[in-house]
Amino acid sequence: MLDVVQKFIQKVLRELFRRRRNLKLGLYGPPNGGKTTLANRVCQDWLGEDMGIVSSIPHETREIKIKEQISIKSGKKELSFNLVDTPGIATKIDYEDFVKHGLSVKKAKQRAKEATKGVIDAIKWLDDMDAVVVVLDSTYDPYSQVNITIIGNLQARNIPVLIVANKMDLKKSDMKKVEAAFPQYNVVGISAKYGKNMDKFYEALFALVK
Amino acid sequence: MLTLQFVPYEEVEELTSNERIKKLLGMVKDERIVVLEGRLRKQEEAELIRRTMEEINERFKGIEVSVVYPEKKKGTFGRKLKSNIAEMLLGDRQGLTILGPASLIKEIRKDPDKIQLFTQERKAKKKKR
Image (cartoon, rainbow over all chains, first blue to last red; front, side):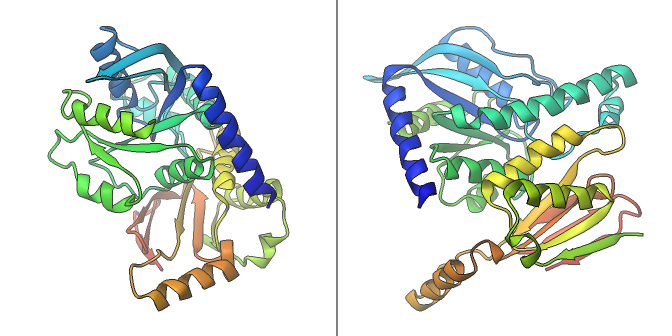
């Protein structure tokens, strides 16, 4: 019972504050799903600048990054938000994996340390989000526990969720598998790298925060 | 040698979230693969990841975790009713949670009501259901 009351109060407060300030739109997901690539794409489309550095080495984003006051337009509709790019959420981080990517042992250990802190921060920030885009690599198995945990936690907090099946330009991409894994959510297939289907992504964003 | 430890739901039922996570993480850090009857609450799953990150060091690389949970199948009204009643009565006791140290488990694949657990050692494959 207390849980229900708490959720209701959270929802009312979130709605109240959302009207008074720019809403916080979070990008969540596992490492290397393309969160920062999508953040850069959105920032390039509407601000003409990048938001962060992208890399093929996992855990490139190890700190929360915020780009304030992004306004997107579609016909007569306009939407303003602060975009929050979060570190990829993982259940394991091994510095030796970074060594395999060519980093020195010292740098790899430092990266691992920062990456663990990044995951902790990303989880802490879940409560601050008004809406979340979960960015998944559509060439990977969508049934991973990290994906399920992220989406389950957003659902438990009544935070609206849009799922992006990224990297649809790749041959191994399987959009249908992502849709089948999360049938209760709107799934948009995009290629953030090449800007494919971004119009559909923006439409879905309007629908998400209406 | 792999050690599988079965944890009946009764063993964690009365514990607080903090105690549950501490217990499970403790077993995993002892190099055991834990098969828990039932599942953690959503917030507990996120807290498990957070606490795992706090514990990571050069020896402990993290965990692999997966939950198998009976999906709500599309079907007749009777079937749906039965499944809802089972959920009401059993709650978090339904399903199975498998977790273990990342140093032992390479990957857990879920498909979606079957789990395949790949170990790091001989890359041997074990199937669980």
